[in-house]
Image 1 (cartoon, rainbow, N blue to C red):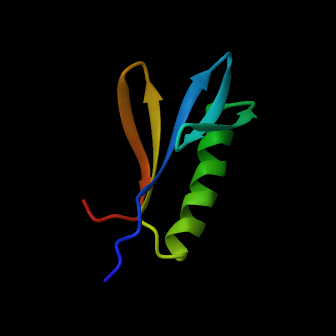
Image 2: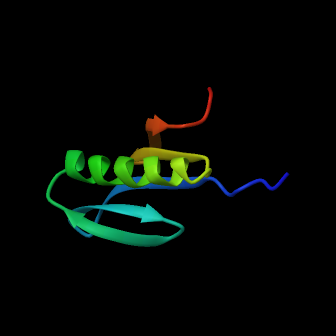
Length: 73
């Protein structure tokens, strides 16, 4: 059985704007945190539909909050 890599979409406030960090690449900017979360969640759901484990996290300072995941806790 092949184990697919976990796709982690991390929402960060970077260079004055909300962005999505995926594998050290930034996507955005988004006008609000909520818009970035919505975009990341839509993309993460598609990754999950393709068989990838996926999560959306928001980074505030050094803390992470998981806002969506397709993995059991």
